[in-house]
Structures are given as structure tokens and as C-alpha cells.
Length: 71
Image (cartoon, rainbow, N blue to C red):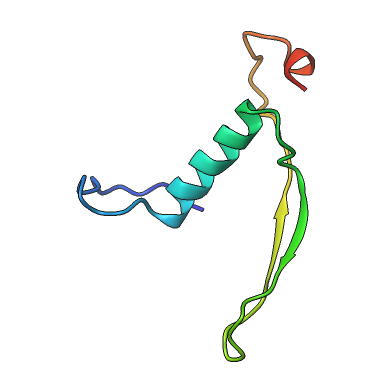
């Protein structure tokens, strides 16, 4: 996923990436399980099913906090 270089119109709904980022951050902050694999089936015969994998990764930068305390 690449960040968008354009400015989003405030009346435009969030992009998929923005909505996913907000969902993951919100769930993580609430202590919900975020990491995992999911199989999502759509109710339409012509629509594809989806497999989603979310992994936790840390940047190489030194954090200002101990990430183990948050886990």
C-alpha cells in the first residue's frame, strides 16, 4: 500500500487503507485481537471470497516506550 499524494475531500468517504488503519488502531487500543488470518465469504456467487492476514511488525527505529508493555 502506498500513501496518497492527493488531498482528500472532507465529504469523500475514507479510502480502504484509511478505514483499515483506523479499524486496526481502534481494535488494538481496545485490547482486541488484531493479528491473525481470516477467511471472509461473500454472499454473492459471482463475488470473490477473501483471505486476510494481519501481522504485527515493528520499525527499526528505537521506540520511546517499551513495546512489550503494550503487548
